Length: 204
Ligand SMILES: C[S@@+](CC[C@H](N)C(=O)[O-])C[C@H]1O[C@@H](n2cnc3c(N)ncnc32)[C@H](O)[C@@H]1O
Image 1 (cartoon, protein in one colour):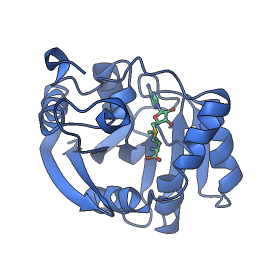
Image 2 (cartoon, protein in one colour):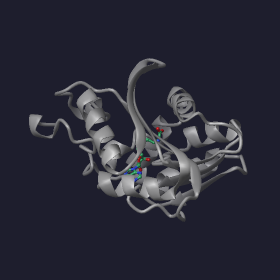
Image 3 (cartoon, rainbow, N blue to C red):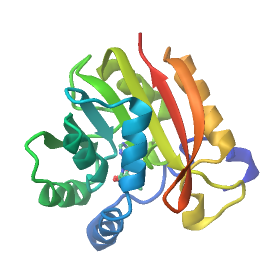
Image 4 (cartoon, rainbow, N blue to C red):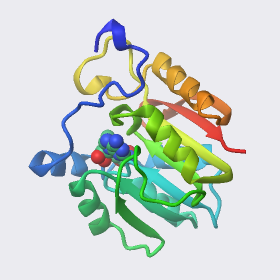
C-alpha cells in the first residue's frame, strides 16, 4: 500500500480471487476463529429472531451459521465457488442458503432483507459505490447495515494490510452517508485476539 491510497476502503480490489487449492486453504483458515466477528456483527446490527440477514462475502459461512443460531434466516453471498462449496458442506441449518454473487451485483430483489452485514470483505470489493448501492437496494426500510474489518496500521504490508486503517473506515463511512444511509457510525473493538473496526448504518 502506498500513501496515495491510504483512504481507499477497497484497497485490495485486485487481490487474486479465492480459487483452486489456495482458495480452499484460505476457506479452511476462515472456518475457525471467526466467532468473535460473527458475534460483533450480530451485536452491532441488533440482530433478533425473525430478522433476515444478507452476509456479503460470506466465505465459508461462520457468521451466517451464527445468525441462524440466533433465529435469523440468512442468505450468504460470495463470488468464490470454493467458499460456497465449503460453506454448504459445513452448514446443516435450513435457515441458511448460499448464492453465488458479488457485492456489486446481489442476486436478491429490492427490500428483501432487514440486515446486511459484511465481514472482512469490503477491502476486496471491486466497486465500493456499486456495493453500497446494492446493499441499500436490498435493505427494507428500517434496515441495518454493518461492515467489519480487521483494524490495520498505516503502512502495513502483506496480510497485515488486509483490513482498514481508521482513515479507511472513515472514508467508507463517508461513502455510506453519500449513499443516503442514516445513523452512520464508526466503532473500534477488541474481538478475541484482534482489533477490529466497524461501520454501522441504517436505512429510513
Ligand atoms: C477474508 S474473506 C472473509 C470471509 C468471511 N466473511 C469471514 O469473515 O470469514 C473475504 C471474502 O470476500 C469475498 N469477496 C471478494 N470480493 C468480493 C466481492 N466483490 N463481493 C462480495 N464478496 C467478495 C471473498 O470471496 C471471500 O470469501
